[in-house]
View 1 (cartoon, rainbow, N blue to C red):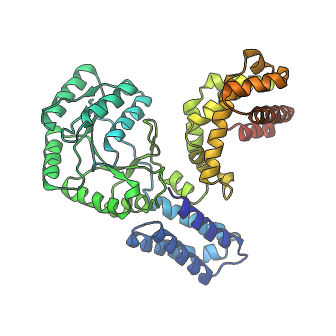
View 2: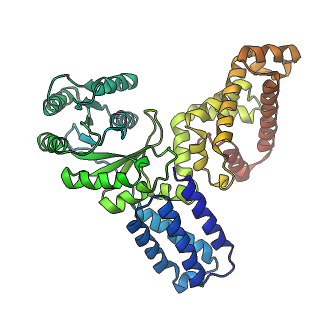
View 3: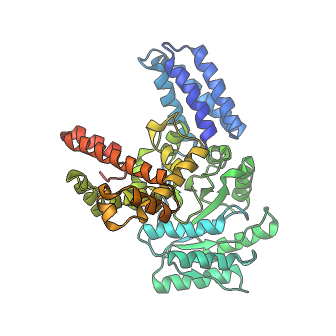
Length: 449
């Protein structure tokens, strides 16, 4: 979402870093460009003005102007102020001392509220909890059924009842959670296409009667400054404790994400980065600021890798590399692990050394299709061919191509890349000590440790 803003800021800071000496004048000029970039990125104009002013006050100090690397110091100031702008420290939801913890979710129709409730269920499920999804949106057609289907896919219980008032549904859900030891209780509430008095009153009653421990507002990050206005209205009319930004994987400018914390004073707790139920992440301001400034986010990348690769799998892969027994079956498994980590563009956003070299959307689509072709080709091979690719002659290549719906050229390309990977692994095995371990981790980021 922040791709255009990131590119603009990178260009500005590259010029600053390239300048041998900085003055107040060229810093002021750079900050004027930063302000324009923020405004074009749909950041609230008051937020953009205040942000640039804070950076200017710090950046024109003698300590920075006379430092050995003044350009780097200015970027450091911008990064620190950007972290403060979008929240400072990571906000975590505290669980109630006496379960169940009740989390009430608000939002307008179309913001992804019901899907977000299911994503929250998946998130807490991974954290070791036993959540209960509650369908209290009795107005939108099929809202209850939608949550039931999502809950069934996740293996999570869903409480909902046609023809009952939201308060009654919520009370029954709390009794069910207490009886079965379920927590947290995730309450999906009714939304509208716009904020109206009837919806506000119903939410007030629901909040008063249920007494949730946390109230979270779902905000569509692609709705621009309307998202900020809506968040202000909800805060004034109903009140909430934190924000969940959805559709951060979209192609809109995304300035609302940078404005909403400053305008409402409420922290961003989670962000949705895809349509799948596992595409919900805790919001880390420092990591997000690093991504926006093109610095990558290695910590999140490692966490994604650890989520899809267990310790035993990683150790087995390392053993095969050491023993030179890495086969095409292992290659296919690594392709699957890479795809599990999410879309390639999101993975590459987290890698600092891709700065300035990230492929475009068409190229990324091509890379995704290439991964799928490679998996299909390996799947069309016999066990002997996967273990010993040297036996694959011309006739076998033709058969594999027909079976996988690809071409002989595709098969040749896969075998060539596999051979190059094996050759590279032999070189890594020849390294000793820390340098070898570092090179191995750089080459195979899906390995743990």
